[in-house]
Length: 379
Ligand code: GDP
Ligand code: MN
Image (cartoon, rainbow, N blue to C red; front, side, top):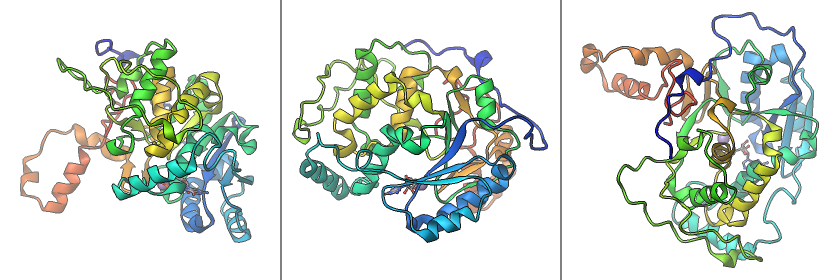
């Protein structure tokens, strides 16, 4: 891999700084919120809608597309519509986009999933979670309700936004020629993706793709260390047809550092996913069986595709968005505090205080370019 680059001068800037009146003067982008959910998640969905409406969409009125592998019930649909004045559509995800494809042996896949459950791999034993990850990896952008849109903003149940977003992030991304936007980058649980990098790396090599500078964000530096021998290729028994041959030497000594953009928040161009390059990538990953025999998430899939196909300049870090999902959050207001030197008075403080300070280590520096080119350290 190339030496660490000096890319700070090229590093992308926050789109808007300071306190603004919401600017709604320009026409909207061709975009929608995309929410995959189940009826039982209604409360969580309402929480998320309240939050995004209050902090953004009451001014911008972007439509929502709700998707479900089952049927939304009337209560779900009626309730959701009460929380926005924007247009709302509900769609069903058919068996062509959900569940086992016909080229997979469901018995072997199910055994693989059960084994992951026995090994206490997070969500590994949950069949529906595998379906969801594969749907978000290779299908959501092909859903008929999204066909008319060029951009999407992914929304999940039980998330919250805690800063007002007073500009249109879609328009800002268009203006700055961005493809993919994120707000948190984290490390994946290694046991969920033991073979993912082997295939992503093979995709890159087989298609003669040279890094445009983003790939390195996902590569563990291994100074003077002999590369580990790659894990065995995933078994063929799961497949009704043979999987693509990949060269076991193809890792070129690279190892995945587990970093990925956390995809429960995403603002991106749909034509990135609809491109032939992304489709080829998804096909190769899919045909390996890794969505079944391992528990590949859509987050590392999207991230490694971006790493193979995009450059740092195509990526936008929404460091100005206050965002929380479960236990991980990104809080812009906390970031500048990290730049203060270590403070002796903290030695005297309570454990709780200490914990808070420990957590503070995780806040990215405000607007400080990082060498990975996207301005954000991977937690
Ligand atoms: P986590 O964020 O990784 O803990 O996973 P979630 O349980 O939040 O699932 C991610 C997204 O997929 C959320 O929007 C869920 O509502 C949705 N989701 C997960 N599993 C299913 C499923 O079986 N059916 C449907 N319709 N949505 C699902
Ligand atoms: Mn979630």
